[in-house]
Image (cartoon, rainbow, N blue to C red; front, side, top):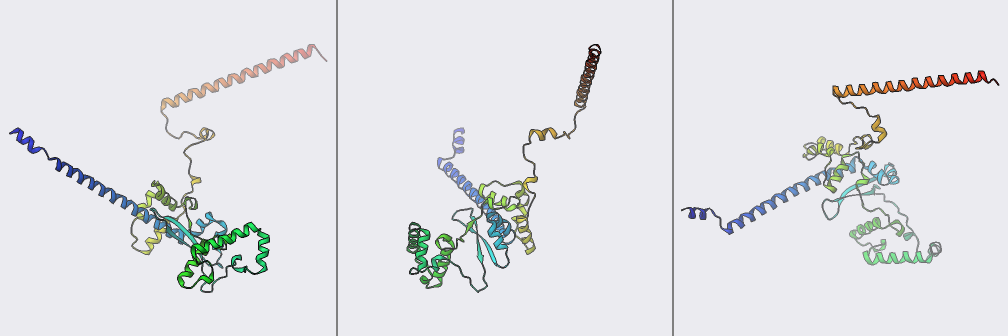
Length: 314
């Protein structure tokens, strides 16, 4: 009877394997769900960062990237607009920005030696003399390479609207030395974002996976879906708000001179206070003895000099 009971309590090997397999599948599903939740959290925080960077702190960020361009964008006559978007093929996405110039339908003229200098003009000969033959031929070969690669590198190559968009995009990505505008999508990294803003902690969390204490305090509120426009604007202000600067924070270490100046503010025991008082009195007594001995020695020395002077007058 006991043997039959023990045999009945044992599970077949097939059931144990299927049970273990189900546990692995369940653990894999839980892991995927948790990682998906983390990715959604990071993306939502990055979305607030992009909106805040475009509508609230554009000038502060651009001032760290390029001060000259920041002053140009700040000029109301230029009517420039900075767009901030996501980029990249992996997660988390990269944050990029680009400066656009709005002309209100009037258009603008972009001066470039590549378009102004005609091949049969004397200006091309003068440019070759000034640049040198090696650099001039290198420029011609670079133009030919761009044409073979993109096929639409000049205005005469434009036929459709798609061609115009491709030509305009190529001008933005081409360096100014090659006849382009040099106005491509540039990446915003941690060095471009002020450390005093929450968006710095968000980008750092997306790159390293380490969340700061400052971000922990506001994350629960930022992850809430805004019910009103006021709540959404408040969330953006929190992300772009300037907090206490790092210079006002005390470092984790102190210099020796600073440590000697710091007074102990905590409570001491009665025994420790009595010991300190005895040491202070002993130090004062030793100091007074040294002072009295020095005064006696100085008086004796003065007396000896007076006696010698009296017996040996000049």
